[in-house]
Image 1 (cartoon, rainbow, N blue to C red):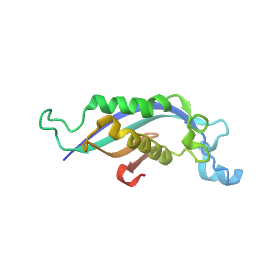
Image 2: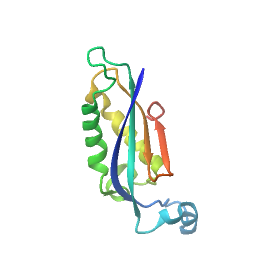
Image 3: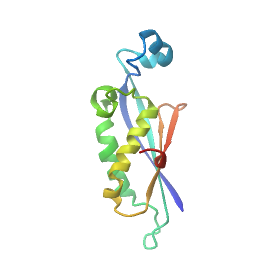
Length: 144
């Protein structure tokens, strides 16, 4: 079994604010990320897949197919957007990087079989670096 990881980048803005919390609670919990005008990140997303090497090609994944899927489902909708205002999944959900990783995973899983059409490869995990120090990861098989 092989594991292959591809790295992608996009820029987006968001505001971390939970409407069920008071202004003071939001400020304490989210700090500068609760700025009413939002703030942005240059996100780095790692998409990892797993699978056996194909006997004909020697590859575990067709990188071109993976790139097309990520471009369509992640980069096109997320790059240079305001996550709170432009991504429907974040209506009523705080767009933390944890929730962003889950949403990216769901988008890829929802279109995975159409892109690859076979049992292998499988989506393994999503990692998002919001900064050099803040990195978030979800395992694909733990996300519905």
